[in-house]
Length: 283
Image 1 (tube, rainbow, N blue to C red):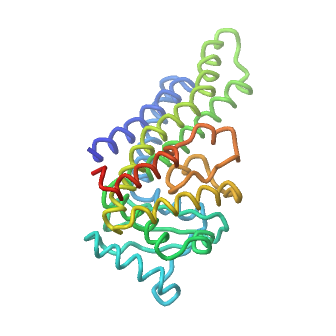
Image 2: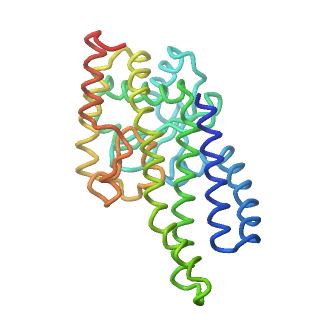
């Protein structure tokens, strides 16, 4: 199923490029857009995880640099029958974490310095198990490609806006200008809808899978409560709307208008489900 979703996202990216290319440049614009979309799909599959890690200036660490963190992830990965992912630390006081990569053999888990300060060991274990849940469910590629797709949509919206404002169109080209304006208005909405449709269900699944890996759903529930408060108090200044859905909790709390359309399920619902798992009322 995740393979089908991945193909759908990459096809959607190609279709959007071609539509915008046609709106801005006619037949020649469509051809150029088709070539660019092929390159984008190739890049998003092979390199989008590296782009996301670079965006947040994540630094890969070794066992010698952070033995407790590295050892905890290694133990959880063994319990989940997963290859050991690469481990990254993001130098940021906002408490958060995410996983990325194209498959379990090429995966990475990143945590901020802020999360290491506010969570106890059991809560951190719950968070790391959640991120390994994303890897085990093989949805890290989907989330990473989604980040690239949403960034692409934002870029296309800006192109359409510049074309509408500075294209110098005559009366015969008013239809094209109107199309560009429509793209400018609808593109951010489309981007958010894509993120919401992909991210909300996968967070519930990762919570459930992570609980199975760690055996401590209540510790994950406690961590989510702390992380939500922490992100409200210290929003991530360099968080990007295109990749916000990759984090365990929304890093855009109170930061922007787009944060109103949360890419994450309500924390209260996630905590309620985790308590039901702990009580044996939810499989």
